[in-house]
Image (tube, rainbow, N blue to C red; front, top):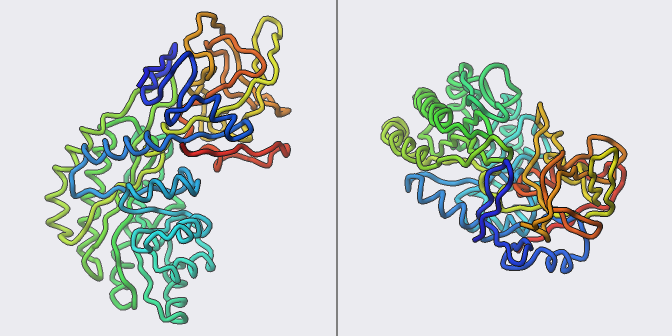
Length: 412
């Protein structure tokens, strides 16, 4: 593979470049765009996904399971590919559940989390016989009632809101008051109540945060998670079958970030396994990962429509933008906007370069994919590639904004 270097960002090492053109799945991006018949398009390289999961397994203890969080990228063809590589899949809506059921995924591999599950979603989950990570007593009550009506025993795990957070996370999803999960201090009483209910108790889901590149913080959170789970397991109505310790593993997007050393995390988990086995001898341990598995495999490609110079500043105006890739525009969780790694996909390494801003066609100054970034000189017709776009891209964007055409997707 070729190392694609940027002036500031971490290098990209999992794609090829030939004759200054980006290759994905052993094909030039120009040919792939022609094959799809349009820009913008999200292109995902299945070999990069496979390599990431194989590498992750080598660095984790054999006893650890890998779950894929479907919300990161629910493209059906991608789901079909990744379902053969992971141990479980986690959904966050009835729509995502429907995608998995249509794909013939074994219900025993599927779990459902989310703080606002509607009654009809809980009914779908019950009938599908998947595990529901309950996030309130209301959800449990609804499942019990539905189970009686349908003659189906609910498969239930408890999503726990722990008393600690994952430090240095892009998004914190545990600790303090949260819409996620059931506060840990209230879980023992709920477990005692479950002893008298007709349910199948599966275990615990403890998710503390996401997009973290701090190895020590991740290890610390996993240590605290295991300790908490062991304390709660004493109250469990039956042996814990699954301990989902969440994910949090981040990928580098910006100029001050580097790859995560997963080997250290794997070694720390290996040290925790005896503690898990002692407290929960029947439990499997799962890492629930989305972004980490697919983000780096995806590239968003749009085409330059116009090139403008305004008072000395170069603007490359494209047919893509924030309506397709909200995260790259800086409007999906960034406090201070930073550039994703962006380049001219058919002129990589050109001797002619300049600082330019890549913008979209929308009538808002927020429609910005790259701000004053060093890249090859581009003209109308050239292709712009936004890397690290395999997670929270198309499905996390306001596709209906200003009623422009939707981007295509392609798995190669």
